[in-house]
Length: 286
Image (cartoon, rainbow, N blue to C red; front, top):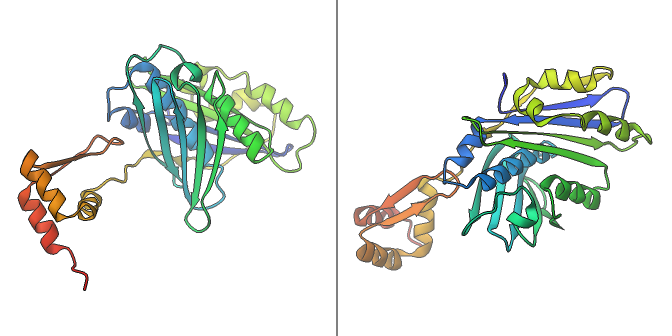
């Protein structure tokens, strides 16, 4: 794959339909690097990372989106956060043996898909749909059918057997004013895409193979990156909330306070001297 970690948007001149194509490698690797995820959880995170990138690209404003799977199965939680700049991070929690399956019902169990959209300016919105038994893409298509009443198809693929794990996906969505049959025609063309093609070929070659008989406008690609928002400063703010007495008691008992970021695997350590400096420098309220 020549161009990795990029999202491509495209429009059809003769149809009221929009499309997106994303291919990820480095950002996927960084999501997986924080924990020793079993292979089925890696594949699920790859699909969720791809889907979040595709959904983030549908935002018409600056802000954040969170796509979360939660259920009573072996994988109790899988979540990806993204923003309008295509900065993504994610984590999953699992317990016990995870079945070697790609079916949501066997991994997440009975649960739901929650999509939370938080504009920088405006009100927060959350949509929730029950998980379909088989695939994340079907659950997402159901979300769009319920929330926006727009025909939407999503294709998601991952490869974690490769030395460099990778994931990729496509989204096709009708626009207001779509003529009957337009979406069905383009959906049929897009559905011929194979996992090996989407994971390994250059994006422009893929689009040419699928739509060479159509007039397609492809916009400049947008880079996709892994970005964790944790910091020592945020940990210090959390300790200030805990209070000097309780934080001091933990240090006396444990010798230090350790704080771990599940998203990136980074560790933050605070000893007695760190706490003294922190609370001495904290502003006093009068």
